[in-house]
Length: 560
Image 1 (tube, rainbow, N blue to C red):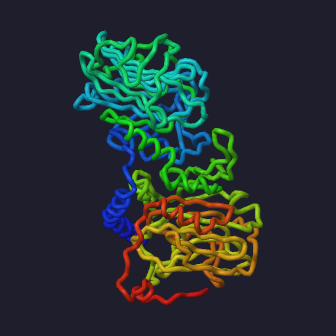
Image 2: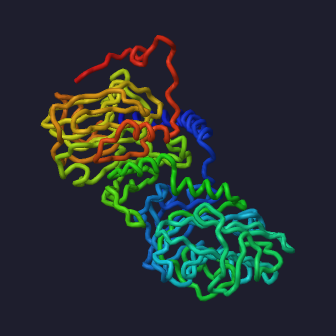
Image 3: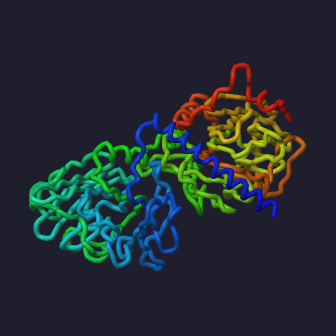
C-alpha cells in the first residue's frame, strides 16, 4: 500500500513539475533555432508511443495506418545501420505484398473539414533495398481520377498529383546513391487555371528535375512543367490511402506499380506547402541533431536516446551504409523496460525539443540491458565513459530515501555506477569490493548533463561540462563482471566500501532520463564540454553571493 502511495505522490510531483520543465526547455530551444515541424500527422517508428497491435498510429493528433497481423504486412524492426541519429527503428517492406492502408477511406479526406484543396506536404524517410528495384509505390492517396503519389522507378523518385481531366503535375528527380535513409518531401498548393504549384525536395534541398525515364518527358521543379495540364485543384480523392503499396487505386493515374522494397522510418503530413527552410530544418533535425551527432562522432558502444515505450533501441552502430566501421553494438545493445515507464513528449535537450525522454517512477521502473562483452563480460577494462542527461524529482537531501541508481553494471565485487544519495551525485568504480568515487552536490528538478570518465588511472566526474571531482583508484583495470546491467535501478551494486550486494532490483530512480551513452574510451574534457554545449541545457540558477549549494542544503561532503 505504501508503495502505491509513494508512486502516486511521485506521479503528481512529476505533473506539477512538468510545466516548469517545458518552460526551461522552451527557453533553451528559443536560443537554439527553429524546431522541426512535426506536421498535422506524424508516424515515427523510432517513437512507438502510438504503436498498437496491427496499427501504426500518429504520435500527434489522430491517424492510423492499418498494418494487420498476417504474413502480408511490414514488420517493425531496428533500422538498418545508419548514422542518422534521429532514426533508430523502421518498418521493413518486402517489395511484394507488404503495405499499410487506411480502412475503406482516404487517410486525409475523411477528416473534417476536408483538406484536399488546401496546401499540403508529404514527408517520408525511407531506405530502398536497391535503386534498381523497378516501379514501386512509396506513398499514395486518392485514385486514378484524382489523387497524388510518391513513386520510385529504377533510381528516380516521382511526385505526381492529378485532378480529374483538367489538372496534372509531375516532378521527377534522381535519388542519391549513398545507401543511407533518404528524406523526400512532395509539396503542393492546389489551384485552377494554372495557379497550382508543386515542389519536390530530397534530403533538405529542392531537387534537380530530370527526364522521367518511365513516362518519357521532361519535368520541372517547382511544377508545372512539360506535360502539365492547367490546374490541380485537389490532391486527393476518396480512395483508400496506401503506404508502401496501393491502398486501392494508385493516386496520380499510374499503373503497373508494385510494393516498396526497403524500410520506412518516418512519415509526416503537413497542412502547408513547406518551403526550403522548413524542409532543411526537418532534415537537420533527423539526420544531424546537434547533440546526437556529437555523441555518435565520439564513437560510443551503446547510445540509448530513450524515445521508445517497449524497448530502448541502441543507436550506436557497428558500421554505416557507406561501410565505415564503428565500435557500436547495434541491436545487440537494445534494452527492454520493466515496470511502467512513461515516454514523455518533451525531452531534456534544449537543442532538440521534439526529442522524447523517459520518466522512471522511483517504484519499480527500470531498463534492462543484456550482458555483453563490449560492456561488462570481456574484461579487463582499462577505460570507460558513462554519459547521460537526467532530472531527478528528489535528490534525497534529507537522507530520507534510499540511494537512486541512474546506471550500474557489475555486482558487489567489481563494477561501475552512477547514483544519487543525500543531495549528491556519485560516480563509483570498484574492484574486489575496493570502492572509489567522485562526488558533487546536485539539486532536484534540475536537468544535468553528466559524464563519469575512467582512464585507467583517475576517475573523473563531469557535470554540465565541468570537471567537479576526481578519485584515484589503486587499480589500473576492472575485471569482467557479470552481475548485470540496469538503468534506473540496481540489480546488485556497491555504494561504499562497506555497503554492496548482488541483490535486486532496488534503489529505484525517480525522474527523467535521456540520451545515455557508453564508451570503451575515456572522453577528454574538451569533448565532454562540446557535448554539454550541444544539449542546450540552461545552467542552474546562480545562488546568492556568499552561499554555496552545500551550505544552502546544510550538507557536509562525505568521503567513503
